[in-house]
Length: 447
Image (tube, rainbow, N blue to C red; front, side, top):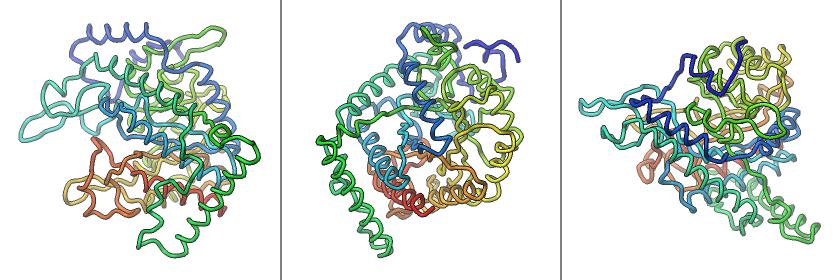
C-alpha cells in the first residue's frame, strides 16, 4: 500500500465533495485550522480506544447519540445541556439493564456536515446546491446561503470548541437531578396506549434504579454526582476532509497521526468506497474509526475495509455501525457477522436503527417509527446472540428537546407539525429517547 499522509486523500476520488468555487479561500482556511489548538487530545483518543477494546470483549456497552446535523445557531447552553442530560440519563438506565459500564459518546461538537442524496435542490424551477450542513453552507434557499463557504470551516471549529468546553464543564460538575429518576420527565409511563404490564415494569425499573443510586450514595458517603462524575466523548461523521486533515497531527511521545477534531470519527455509508478519499484518509489515523454499513454492502467488502482500516487488527480500533432497517436485519446482518467472524477481525458491533427506517408521509414530511427503531435493535440482539457475537452498542439521532419528528412513543402522524424542527432527518425527542433506553435495558435484562 502506498505511503500515507494527512493529504494523500487528495489524490483519490471523493464522494460528497463540498462544491467550493475558490480553491485559494479553501487553502487559506485550512492553513488557519492547522495553526489552531486541537479540539481533543491524543490521550483522550487513546482512552476511548481502550474502552472500545473492552466493549469488543463484551465488558462495556456504547451509547452514541445526538443531532442528525448540528447547527451553529444551536450552540447555546440550554440545547447542549439538554442533549448531554438525556444521554447521561439514558446511560444510567442502560447501566442498570446491562450490568456493565457504558461508554457515553455524543454525536455532537462537530456534526456540522451532512451527506446528501443529491448535489442540488430544486424549488419553483430554481436549482441551487444542496444544504451540506453548516460546515459547508447554510440552509436558507438562496444563492448566497447555498454557496460553499470555506470560512464556515473556521466557524465550525469555533463552535465545536465552545460546545466541548461547556460539555467538559457540565461533565465535571454533574447535573443536580441526575441521581433522582423521580425528577426525570417520565410522562411516557402514563400514556394511555401503554400496556399495564409494561407500565408496571417501567415503574419497577425506576424504583430499582433509584434504590441503587441511593445505595451508592450511602456506600460512598458522598453524592452520586461525585461517584458518577462522567467521562464523555464526542464523535461526528468525518465528511469534510479539509476540516479533518487540517487538525490531524503528530503529538509528542506518541507514534502515529491523530485526527484531533473529535475522539471517534466515522465514515458514512455513502463514502466508504475502498478506493475512495475517505477510506484513504481514515486508514492513516490513530483514532478509533466507525464505519456505517447499509443493506447493500457485500460482506467481503466489509472484511477488506477492516483489513484496510486496521491492518494489525488493533484492539479498539474499529466500530461497525449497521444501518439495515427492521425488515432487513434478519437477512442482511448474519452474513456480515459471519464474514467478519471467519476473517478473525476484531470489531465492535453497533446498531444504528434510525437510518434504515425512514419513511416519507403523504404530506412530504420525513419521519421514523419508534416501533421500527426498537424492532431493529431487538432483531440485532437476536442475530448476534445466535451467531455467538455481541451487540456492543446503539447509535441514535436524538435531541433533548420536545420536538415532534418521529411517530410512535406517544406521537401520531397528526402531531408531527407541532414542533418539527430538524433540517435533515427526524430525531427522537426527550421522552421517546428515554423510553427507548428503558426498552433497550429491558431487552438486555432478558438475555
